Amino acid sequence: MEKMEKKTGPIEILFSYTREDEDLRDRLETHLASLKRQKRIICWHDRHIRAGRVWNLEISTHLNTADIILLLISADFINSDYCNQVEVERALERHEKGEVFVIPVILSPADWKEEKFGKFQALPRDAQPIIEWPHLDIALYNVAKGLKEIIEEIEEVRGSSV
Picture 1 (spheres, rainbow, N blue to C red):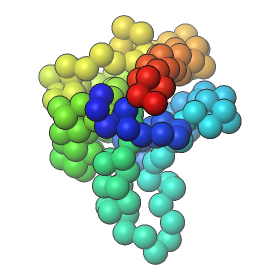
Picture 2 (cartoon, rainbow, N blue to C red):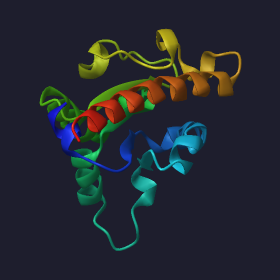
Picture 3 (cartoon, rainbow, N blue to C red):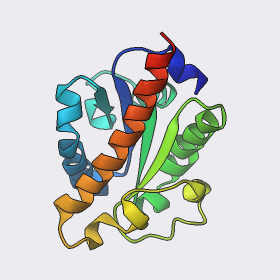
């Protein structure tokens, strides 16, 4: 990916989600703690927006700078006009230019395969919704492991461009 080859520093991961799925987003971010501590990644979501900031401009900025955009899929996400008309649209535009990895993370059962992002390989394994796994942490670990493979791929590309 052209843009990624020129960037340095931690890989930015943006979480695109609905408020109804905030708890699962937090749990997933917890599973990425080791990568954050190693300063290999930075996680961003709208809860990082400070008072006095224009929220849609902040989100737009990060939609334009993220290396990985995670679409946290649930029925609520499918139902969200903002997620689909703004965040998914921008993610797909950047993907078409080779600027970002777009990864659906299936949180709960939802009719997502015919959506614009339905063409992407999803996490966790076999796109089995996280809440249907026998243990939540096993599902989240599976997602974190899949993300780590993408992170290593980006790091390798960045390293080879030095």
